[in-house]
Length: 311
Image (tube, rainbow, N blue to C red):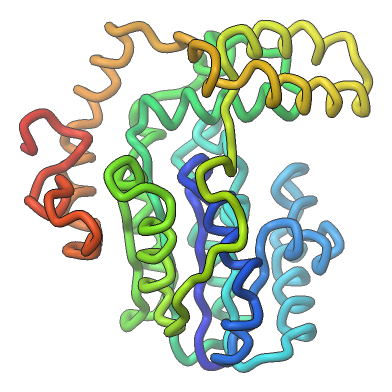
């Protein structure tokens, strides 16, 4: 394989937007010699091998088998995979460091696919917002846990992005491109420039065209939706939970209703204070100077959006 591009999330960092844009521009990538696999396509192609490992804690042989299936199905010399569950599940930080199996998964990808060139794209999100969004995602897919129960096993050390970046760098060749980005830039850039910068970082030489509504890709649960979902998830079967999710997305999203208040101000302050040294180290790993569409973006001025005063 000539070039392997792995967009590994993280969860809740615009992955749905990116994946819709990749799907909409599949022909343009093919013309440049790239297959494109987004999350659901990857899962279908690999017949659930990867997800069985992720969800059931099975052998990493399942991951190997999944990448073998990807290799055998390739129609182009290069490949882009966009899959936020590729390294671990959204709540991996409840049982250990963020995406702890990342090194194993990336090592298997290298061994099976044998790319001449590797690019890994990782978007990160401020940890307090990340855990809140991750919790809401688990409720969306059926959990009945309260936020307090969800957070009980979580420590600040589990939420270190810099540790994950170091793990990724250690699992890919020394000349691989590991590009780390702040998701928060989407607020200044907005959706289309955000996607354009993602495309730029793939190195595939494709300029995106937009055939879908980029401003209404993914909505979150409001406080009312969260309360209704927690009740419904405990009483309804899988099909009715799916219908409830669609109803809540359409009628009780955080676009039209107040968002849930999950972390208290004191909890938020404590978390970010404990993570300040880690986030300072992270800032030195973030890909510099990429936000051409917003020259005044904080990261371009040497400031971290996770630290007070850019320190």
